[in-house]
Length: 432
Image 1 (cartoon, helix red, strand yellow):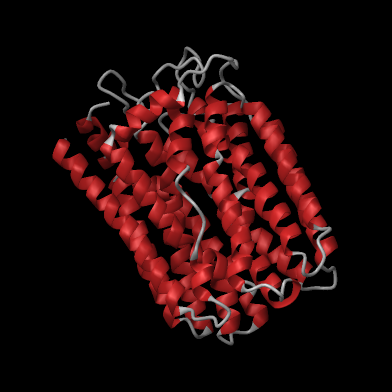
Image 2 (image 1 turned 180 degrees about the vertical axis):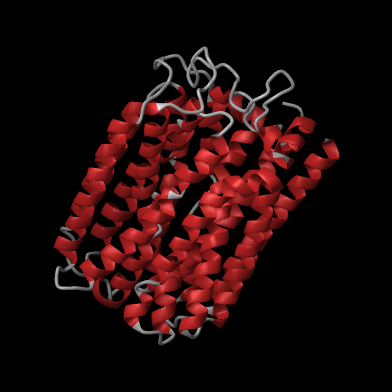
């Protein structure tokens, strides 16, 4: 793919669908692993069933991770009072880190045709880890860390990448729109899970039975997801792309390098409100019962943002949309310094949830745009997301709860990531 073609793809919806000067639709390059001999049908019973299954994977994956703010608050105030907030935050941080970084492995296996094995194994590990978590006792930090941080992260990491890449087998013209709808499962899950967990953990049910109830709910949805998803090509034991070959291409692809660096910095900052908005609200004297709904409010706005991202990208281009949304995220994260009343918590939750949803919805389609050969999509996603980790703001918060320090750090680091994406835009424009 030439740089001029990449530029055109990022500026209009019609050109977004083109992969090179020989193709008219994004995703029409033939691949023995990703596509059959005919082009993706852009619809059909199994295509939409697969999209629904991927939606459920997002609902149970990042949707659950984005609910960690409930656990963070519960552990800090009740269950792990012997540990500082910075230590507790690493449970969720490691979880999100493993989801992204295990794409290196799951992406390679997906390219080799191991889609079903990855989905089944990842779903089983995630289900077992949540049931295992329910047996944790107060003060057992390392048991919780292994169950919720390590095992759950591994399970989700095996399903996340393949659960997004499989969309490219079924959709071409509608791919960006469908991916936006699929990733909306994450904030929708982050609406349902926090409400459920808050009522279970802080109610009469208690931690053990509450977590088991949540684990059973997630397990049923993952079972439905595994039964819904289908590939369009027969699995093959011969890899269509090796990491060494793809890595060599990526090392010579300056826009791809800049995109990965920008995503890294943005993700480090963007998770701060997701993990700490509820605790921040409580510590600033906001009613506890209302604070329980701050994450639900934020993620409700994120659903709208993710659903609209595919439509907006048709007018602005994916890269321009990513730059604008990440810049808005940076400003809003810094504005959390002023959080003190219910009105400010609502405002930050709604506006940040929306722009964060738009930004997240654009990530995977943006990687797809820079993948001229879709047989390399799994590998490229693995390489790109391997450098994306969780928040490190917990250490800056400390036990004294100095909220302005992590807010300022997270906002500035996100601003730096947005600036790198701007540089990427100039590089593409100059080469185009």
